[in-house]
Image (cartoon, rainbow, N blue to C red; front, side, top):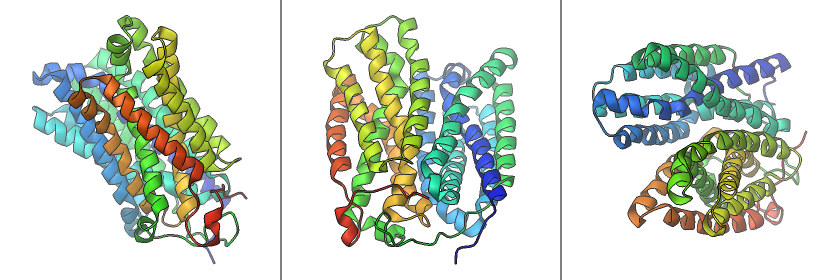
Length: 404
């Protein structure tokens, strides 16, 4: 029998996860620091900004390893250590005197600390609410998205009033305290009993077993596609508006706010929807919306309205997909090994964060990446419409949400 955990402990774990995710989401304020770090280090902004690419890769790698750490030490200890490392890394970043140290402190260490806490606490919380996986994912990942918005104002205030180094110090202390507090509230999810019904996989898949299934790699491609599309457009939206759509700087910069609202809306709307209809259908909806956005960039008459519409579609799809995917992976391969199984697929987040920029650099501009996004989205949409659950007679059924 599965170990029982009280409703009080479940709710405290959910609250602790939300607090932790909010603090971990603060790393997405990184663009606020690029210009001042460039001045301090006497380096081009482009080289300083590359630290965020390193951070994204380290975050994805750490996420893939966090399941093993939880198995050995438990969610509470690993989360607390994640908070300590995040705080220490930001304090060290304040005193980075050259580009290499910045890449190590702000890239590798901050990314590793953030990734260790992010996926593990999310997966653990989802396991505690198997009947409301979509809603719980929306709450946790929504908090992660809100963290970037909340800390934008916190970090901007301190940047304006206390300077660069003090801002990193203050940010580090606040984030560390929040992650540690959240970790202290958490309990490890008990091992789930596998229900042998027509709507769920007949067993849990280990990572090795899941990797032998074609569905695992098809879902990995879908995740990579949406992450590449979302992260690329989110990262260079202002530049797309100015250079590709030929909008004034102020109008192009407004896309940042539109993206933030659309991203959060996607997390909440599609996350909640995934508890009512098949999660793979929700992913198909997200892919279709993203496809419309990319087509608007490539084929619509370029204007302020078409640009805002396109980036909103892509951000909505990205936010919804990363919210629904943990629960989707549990539908396909079971809950008990979710952190490991989703952890490997989550590497697509790190890869996707740099692929779009590489393609644009090699082939001379935004359009090349947009066409790559278009092709991958079409393939992913077909996958979402046709993929079946792995294993025996269930192969003939599409993935369904596990309902209470």
